[in-house]
Length: 148
Image 1 (cartoon, helix red, strand yellow):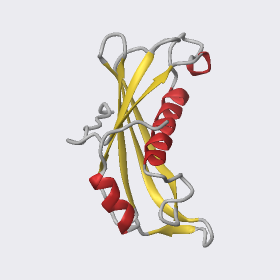
Image 2: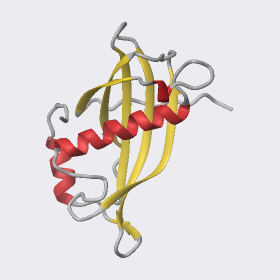
Image 3: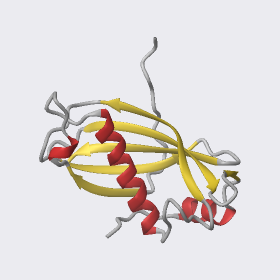
Image 4: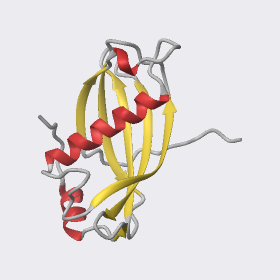
């Protein structure tokens, strides 16, 4: 089976810093796959908050994660500080991919690369919805920043 490859978008829209807690550490003594996806989730929530959105209300629609992939580039340990950045890729009628990269605050080395596919969802009708044009416009015009 070929190795997974996740390409970074040319523009990273958002950056945030996250401290690795003991809850992120698995029995091997480093960040596990569940924690990597939680880090992506936290970064996504902060990015949306920076634009006054939530995962349940983006121009009247929510988003759901349709798929995810994680690439480990180096070990991450308890107490490490990571800078996570995200950008958008592979837009389609119903959503897009969010690509995340995480750099070690100690070495600057990329330690994780993650991709989550997201689609818009109408929770009242319980079905996938078209991506709101207003959100796509705001996201493409977004500047770098960090949520509170």
